[in-house]
Image (cartoon, rainbow, N blue to C red; front, side, top):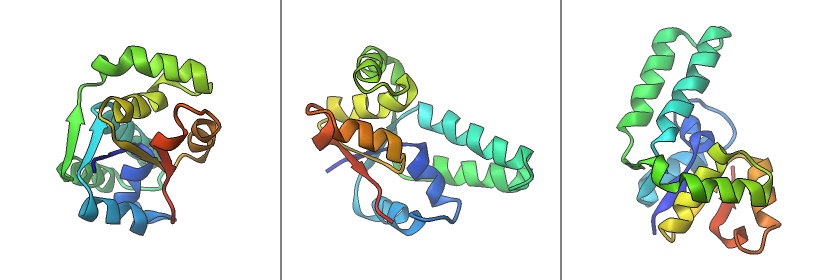
Length: 137
């Protein structure tokens, strides 16, 4: 079964933190998909970490290259923007975060996230609860 992953999961592939092993296991066990937004979100987070001195620029670039080299199918996000907005209204979450769930619903896939707030909001909604799973460390 295909899993849709977001930046909170993808960043764990390149930054060692709680859940990194579980995130890495997803690559080995499942076909992965994500909206193309994932690449920009990861680039932005890695840029911010380099700007704060947490990572060097070279390490941030290498980390992004590693994420982009991961066997993940990138799907154009614009096709799911309306659904993402509707989900955002339903869950009181951002449309950017909701885009991942919109893709998962369209593909009859499961959305895996490390974003506890989003997973909790989805779990309280009857329509979305079964389509979202929190990444377990």
